[in-house]
Image (cartoon, rainbow, N blue to C red):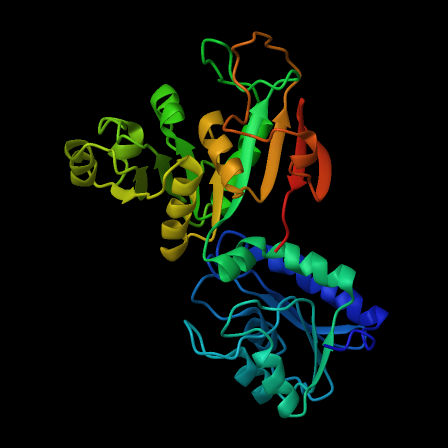
Length: 375
């Protein structure tokens, strides 16, 4: 794509397309979130975004928003390159050509095999001018769809690790008490993150200690995420709240080959899906489980721990972003729990370094966000 032809007006409209794409967060998975704007010079004629999985794509919604306006001199600005294949909806390239639009400015690429520049090639062949964004704008657009991009390239979910810790870096007391370290506003934020992903994962230790629901309990939830429990020996009680709610929200229990058949059968009989993860150690079994989850349509997963499971994910190289709530309190104690256990690294030079770091005040807490990888 030609980035030299991208003007200041183009960048402004692309920024708007990226902004409105966010309206689809949590509603289109495993498909991407996309925004589109149609304009002539500075005048916006119509805009739209991908609102729901299976519904019209952003480009189609933007074209419809223009009504009967002649679009032959208009430019389409879109945060992700248009699709050219038949899926749940017809190809966007067909709608663009039928609209009469002769110029398109695209913020980011689609890394899937069925796209990856093909739609833009079709538009060029039909005489449409195709312009690419500058690198800063393109990166902002790519960051919108990290889950989609990782899933497209690896078939595994993008993993967001969330934890709440004290000033001395502890997530639970020596007696295992952890409720509540973070404040009410922080917990509400975490529920919104649940609402934006396909699955929420915990370890069996957290499941036994807290008996959680793992649902998103905030207004405006489009769908509840699948609940995933990593439980090597299938110890999750069928009387737990997670199992009792399987008729309302799907539950996946990841076990090892060592899990007793009687226990896995009991979970299946109670409505849970049981996945047997293979591998010689915990990081390998994490990767095996993620392969299964990715194949079942999980593109984004929120990892809520505990420390043992989070350490296994880190050792497996499968944490893509970290969000830590730092609460204004101290616990102390040599046996108080750290947020990440596992093997870790032997040398500082081997540490996983964050690509970005952001801080935000949330109530009395400090939210620290770090991207470990970008896709």
